[in-house]
Image (spheres, rainbow, N blue to C red):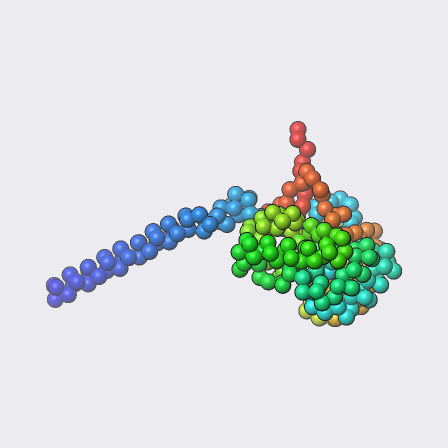
Length: 263
């Protein structure tokens, strides 16, 4: 009996020791370079984020269209934008550019800005820095060859990003752009839900997300434009909305803000 209790005590001490050792090793792991870094970046305010919107007192907003699959509605979108004298930003994927080169030219000829949406629309967080660079450079060169425009705005697919994605984009001379209002046109909920989402969330400096081939996007766009203009807003390309210097990006909200003047 005594021997059994003794063995039980030894087992308990061994289990306790192994548990403490596991916690210790986990702590060492999270102190390794590259493991703790994202946590430290967030805690110290150095977490990198894209620009979601621009903090401005001016009543200006930017419309943006992501082009990935299909182009059936794109001519209609371009006609609506031309009729309303509106210039916007189109983020294009490389495989879309390959499939619709003439449409790319029409977008550029319409005075619209063209941004980079990667070549193959991958989940960038799973790629290496070199693979991300290839995704960006490949489609950037294609756009330049077709239009003469050198894109410098980049929108990550699926809205996914990390410090690695943003720093790699910066090395390739791209500013990473998200959005503050999602029309959710890709969900194909119908015209009215789209209009409601945009109009109820409208704010100065907003970057609004649409897709070029949303089933109800072309149908909803005129009503959205009329509302936005009726509220006294000007619709401009993203590059015209952004501050070019003396700014910072709030790591909590993604707002691009002007730096306060030095005293």
